[in-house]
Each structure stands twice: as structure tokens, then as C-alpha cells.
Length: 171
Image 1 (spheres, rainbow, N blue to C red):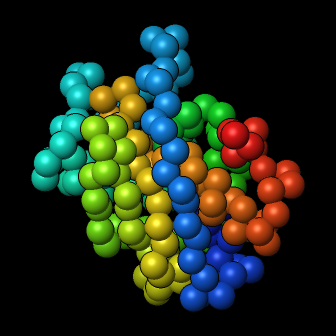
Image 2 (cartoon, rainbow, N blue to C red):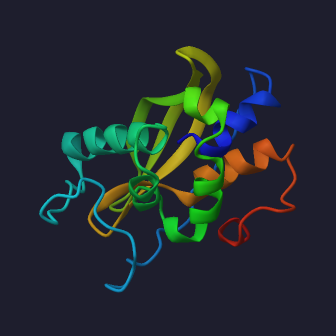
């Protein structure tokens, strides 16, 4: 996917850094939510703490920022993902998004439902946005990319402006 990240890379220097201020984790979505477990498995929860949680965060972050991951799964791997489905779907096929990936370099569990994530964005295997800071949240038994992380990248893409960002970024 790397939805807007790929596009954000076109207008950013390789030394820029986004910073997301962690926010309180959202309440779990209701059972009528359209987000499905990212693995399509038997509905089992990922570990909420320890090495298992760190591994799940790294795996899910890489899946979210991978163009080969189906968009429905990427939406399910984003906190409040349904609020961002339009932007994820619209940017999923862009050439930059197709060439982009992410690699988590550090995870620090900061609470029972949240973690600080350090990561880098790569284009065709070359570092393009190193040293990014983000947030992962434990929502519905799954470690998801925090919507504040995506919003930070979308704002970076927009040259620092909040104008035109999805409604999920305005809170």
C-alpha cells in the first residue's frame, strides 16, 4: 500500500521526519464493524504484551505498508481503518505506492494498548524516509498502525497542511 507514503516521498527530502503524538487508544469497534482480522484466521487475538506483541506489530506494520497486501486487509490493519478506506483505495495503485515498503526498527510498548514505533520508508529497496516515529494500537485483538501515524504521513504529503485530510485526521 504505502498509499500516500509513496506520494509523500515525492515531495519530501530523505531527511524529513514525522512525529505522531500518541493519543488515547480508541474503544474497540462494535461487532458491526467492517474490519476483519488481518490474518483471516480463526479470530484469535494477537499477544497484547511481550515479545509476541512486538513481533505482531512489526509484521502488521510491514503488511500495512506493502502494496501486495490487499486493500481490505490494509484497512483492517489501521486503527479506525474504515474512516480512511477512500484514501487507501485511491492511492493504492500509484507507482510510488507500489514501490514503497516500510521496515520497523524499534518497538517500545508504552501501555496495555499502545506502542511507540520507529520505522523507515523504502522505495524500491532504497531508504527514502528514515527515522519516522509512529504509534501502534491494540484494537479488537490486533496490533494496528495508529491512525495518528497515517495522518502524520498524509500531512507530510500535503506539505504540512491539514487541509483536505480525511475526517479521521481532524480529531
